[in-house]
Length: 352
Image 1 (tube, helix red, strand yellow):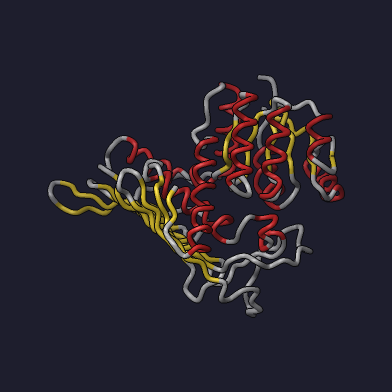
Image 2: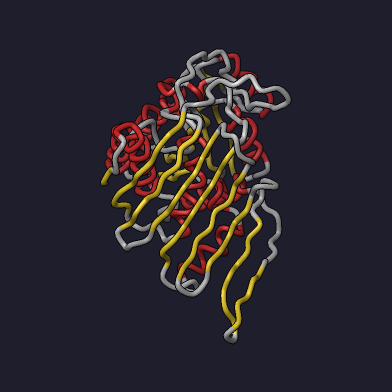
């Protein structure tokens, strides 16, 4: 089997701690180049992972490098620029969440991808946990009945990252667009991805750049960014065309205990996925059997969701199969996230 040639856009945390280690375990790919606005950082990652070329920008890398696909790991503001360049060059695309800084950027990405016909996949690793796939299969096969309810909470008592994450010009938002996208996408995915029709939300900026002692903070490699204009927490509810609803609570900083849970319910059964006490979800199924209520906790082998995600992307590139974590999913999700911010800003329910 010929090796697929991959170029990495962005040499930050997500590239060096998740994507590159996953590629390094494979013998069917070759990382041929990496770029970062900080050329020294790109060269350091190249040296660490044995990548032959390092660049100071994506444009030069895409123009000068023979490759099959671009893995986009840059900050949110740059997703659109890199994706359009990659699509125009005929390169397949794996794009980190969220799809873009805003809906307008996402639409430009969509147009470029559709025009070029390349494979585009959203990197949504939570979908690749076997526990999540198990519940989604139950939903898809009708074993949970008609899905009508979901609730998801991803709360950090104190967990605001430092660096570009808190600068909306680069990130597009705070916990909603950073960690909320994982929780909201997972719940929406398990509901069967119904069409959103309206959202009502509120945000809080009450805690801000706290100085709490005894807590750690995630530090972006671009940690010299000083802007801090993102929200602490957000809560709200989506309503969908099929009558289902999805309520959500997300925070970087709130005076409550940490939580990371998603629940979905249908007319025949429901499920709970709980990651509060660890990276992997614990899954519980609530149903009936022989007229009695039953609680089941299936067990799964541990897998790395980033490795599974990348494996799936590479299989789609080789086969021409349209990825399930699709261009349309990415566009719908960014519409939902931007709807949250619009509703909170305007103090009203927003329709899509």
